[in-house]
Length: 84
Image (cartoon, rainbow, N blue to C red; front, side, top):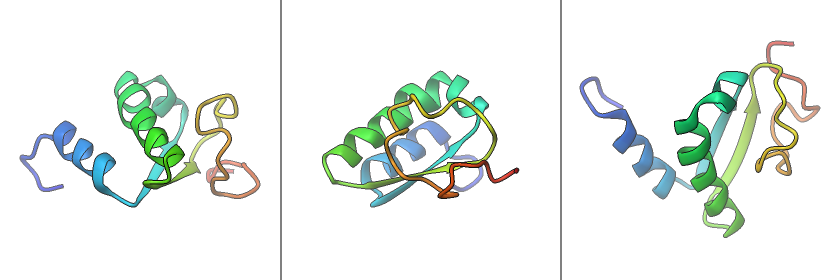
């Protein structure tokens, strides 16, 4: 994204069009209504319809196993956060 662009509309374009969507998982991501309810849920819908591949990237320790993306193998593959 370029400076001066509205990030919401730009992110929506990518969530709707990209073939690979990385979810950068942390407690902040899970607590964000925008990230969780808009970006992530739409990405998971596309993943479930095989329109895109969603890859969760576990950045920091948080309770992500019971989320809609908890069923998807992410990275690191052992489920440990990158910070550990």
